[in-house]
Length: 320
Ligand SMILES: NC(=O)C1=CN([C@@H]2O[C@H](COP(=O)(O)OP(=O)(O)OC[C@H]3O[C@@H](n4cnc5c(N)ncnc54)[C@H](OP(=O)(O)O)[C@@H]3O)[C@@H](O)[C@H]2O)C=CC1
Ligand SMILES: O=C(CO)COP(=O)(O)O
Image 1 (cartoon, rainbow, N blue to C red):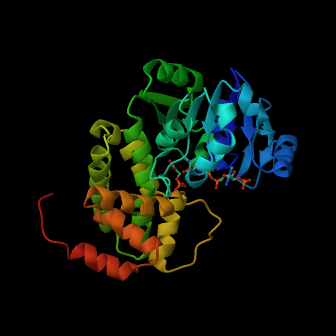
Image 2: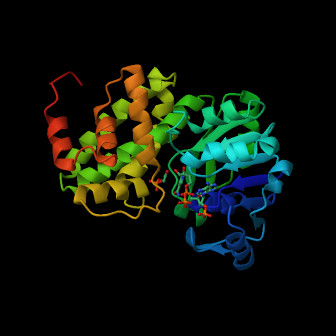
Image 3: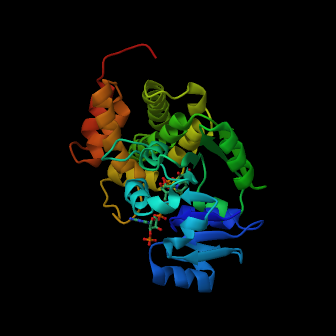
C-alpha cells in the first residue's frame, strides 16, 4: 500500500509522520531544493519546526510518484487545490483522493470533496478533517478525526488504511457536512480572535462562537449536510479547538484584526478567502449569516471591528 501526501506544509508533514510505519509514505512538495533538504536532514524546519521525520518517509518534489500511489492525501491549501488537481489529473484519475484541506474555493464556490469530484470524475473523493493541530499530530499526541466518503466500501477501506493508534478515525458518508464544518469553523475562528483582540471578553466570544455555530448549521443543512455531522468532530469539534486556541492561525489572524495590528500575509489563513466564498453562497441562497458576513466585511476591509460590533448588537431581537 503506497500513500502519497501532496502538499508538504505543516499538516502534510505531520500526517506523513503519523502515517509512516507499516508502509512507506511519500511526502510530495513543490520545491525540489527544500524537499532534498527535508529528505537528507529528516526535518522540515520551514513548515514544521522541531519535528523529526522517521525513516519510512520519502520526501520528493517529483510528482511522478502520484501515478503509483494507492491513496493520495491532498494537503495543499484550498485555494491551490483546483490547479493542483488539473496539473496532475492523469495520475490521479482513478484513485482514492482524500482532501486534507479546509475551505471553499473562491472561484467555483466548491468545497474540496466537490472539487475533486468535479475535476476527477473517475476518482473516489474523500475528506479527512476535524480538530487536529499539525504540531500535536507530529509529536504523537492523540487525535480523533472524521474520514468522510460517500462510497461506503471505500470509506471503510480508507478508515482502516489511515487509522493509527494515536490517530483515531471516525467514518462518515456525509462529505457535504464534513467539508463545510471544516471550512466554516475557520471563519468563525477569525471572528473569535477579533473579539478577543478587541478586548470584548470571553463571554462575548462564547456568544459569537455559539451564534456562528448556528450559522454553520443553517448554511450546511441548506446545502444538504446532516445536522449530526456538524455536531461531530468535523464541525463542533474543530470549532472548539480553533476558536479557543492561539495555536490556530485563523484565530491569530482575527486577533490581529481586533487589535488593529498587521499580520504576516505569508501565513496560511484559510478562513479569509472562505469568508468571501461563503458570502457569495449566502447571497445566492438568500441565507441570513450575520457572523460569517461580518468576517467577510472585516477581511475585505469594508468595515472595521467597532462598526461590526455595533451592527451585530443592533440586529432586531428574535427567538434563539
Ligand atoms: N496546520 C494545521 O494544523 C492544519 C492544517 N490543515 C489544513 O491543511 C491545509 C494546508 O495547511 P498547512 O499545511 O498548515 O499549510 P502551511 O502554511 O504549513 O503550508 C502550505 C503548504 O502549501 C504549499 N503550497 C502553497 N501553494 C502551493 C501550490 N500552488 N501548489 C502546491 N503546494 C502549494 C506550500 O509549499 P512550500 O512549502 O513549498 O511553500 C506549503 O507546503 C490547509 O487547508 C489547512 O486548513 C488542517 C488541519 C490542521
Ligand atoms: O484546522 C486546524 C485545526 O484543526 C488548524 O487551524 P488553523 O489553520 O487556524 O491553524
